[in-house]
Length: 251
Ligand code: NAP
Image (cartoon, rainbow, N blue to C red; front, side, top):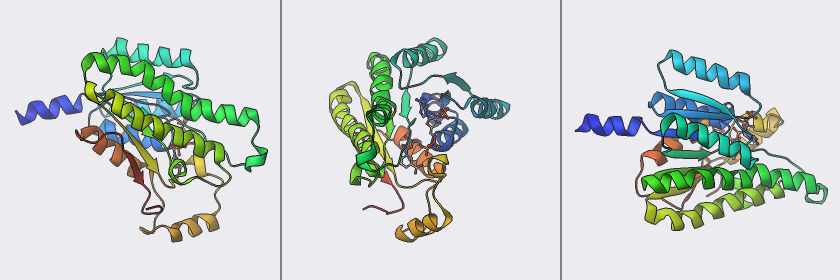
């Protein structure tokens, strides 16, 4: 009996957008160790995606990689079609892909604004909408959106990023209500600061200053977010929540 339960959990089919680098790569690695069947989406990082695939396949893990720019509806449609043809269902969607940009509000151009919304918010709309019909058919599923502390608190010099992430959190709450009766859970994880390429311009001194502001006295790692993702997938009664994983930076 226990064995069957183990099997059904570990066989879940998971799409991770932006899974070749940073937080997405951390999520892919942890879920692969738990024997989830993973479709790693990448856009520019083909080599990193292939290295991850080869490494995990050597450990007999089930992983496919698929190139798609998730800010484009037609590419998202191809990603979902590929996954359904391969696995016939999607149990978990992790909307992780995203970009950041630091700019004074007065200097944000229309192009900056539109790119931010398209990549960080509209992509979540596209991926979720294309996946949800399959989940409704199964009457189950889990959607996890990686938003941000700045969507909750607002980030100076990142107004467009903060707006997009707040939009993602709004989508999480509204969709959780709409999809609850279909047994589909929708949650956001709002990371604090995580050591990835997204923060490659943060200086040593700035890292130290930020670390000093964090009650747990450490900068987040991709694995910290991955562990919360794993928990949310396994959980059965949490929906519509914005879960802050930030070392206590914002409480
Ligand atoms: P990262 O290291 O810069 O990686 C960004 C990822 O997003 C890459 O895998 C990239 O894929 C993918 N991506 C970007 N645009 C894409 C597109 N149009 N289509 C498909 N994939 C796309 O950033 P990260 O720190 O891992 O961030 C991951 C998520 O966490 C983002 O949503 C970010 O906003 C959020 N977050 C990060 C932090 C932090 O401190 N790092 C804090 C809060 C929230 P390719 O390389 O293949 O193009």
